Image (tube, rainbow, N blue to C red):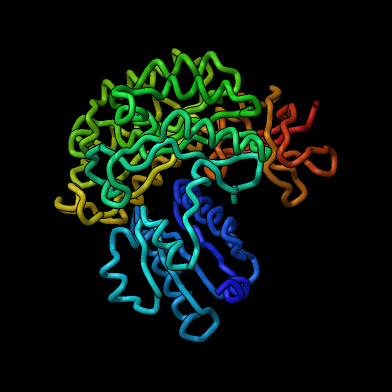
Length: 436
């Protein structure tokens, strides 16, 4: 048995969001601890066991997951791989259909079936590794899930179907995880959850995000702490005081607002009005001067009128969000919106989304140009195409703006901070020079 295991090489492929990255890292760590030859997103095509961690959030993500499964199912048919396993959100939600449609997969697992997956691979689930993991991101930053699942009833979202009810990790478990990451050289901790503002209600009887932020920021070596996926309804304002007071908490918040008209917020079951949404945005900026707000919106949800869309455009124009993304609505089975008529043509959805992004492009350009001549602390992620590429505290990896510094004229150490003076600005990128 042991001899065979050493001959196997496992490749874990991760699709979807940062929450899936964390799940893959936990799986990766468990297999490593069981002496498996395992890689994540291996560049070489030499693994004989493939595990695909799928996404089932929206149509494009589902299609990418299905295409990836089919590609490796074909490789198995051709004898290029021996075993193919599928886990994650798509298989949690559509396991019976997938088993019928793609039978070449050896076994499908849901989002909470890690022990079963390990057992199938011949590995033991090591409880002593809980709170510890190897990271697959660059070692200087890591995502950290503070909770799993969601209790919100949003009309468009299938996350509760795929991830279950909200379950918070304890203070102690999160602190242990942060300390483990810092010990390995992680400088930036990116806090993620389906709804980070709900943190603690199930364990402590009330929202405890502010207390959690304090406890994490007290950990030596956690140089940057970044908050993602806050929910506007019943937002815990005391968390903003902590963000303002603590130097190592980035002046940044990712708060998906989804829409800005009363009609749509009601249809979407967001539990908040347009007026209250605006008040939350204003309070965030008032309590934390200079904070960067990232948000996401949805275009073309069932029931969205031209007036609703105009309200969204005015909202974006008024608030000048530092960072913004927009999705076109896609029907999700099992959701409330899935029972409504998806009557808005796809081209109209895409046209509306493009109009929002055109507006945001101008906003971003204006904000970026205001930074020329100023100096910012930058964390460098990589070297690429003759530039050292990094981020300010106002930017999260992969989704936000970047700072580019000429490698010909400057030196920066990947994974380290440096002071950078901004010399030039584009719509979504900054250029600068290292000053110290």
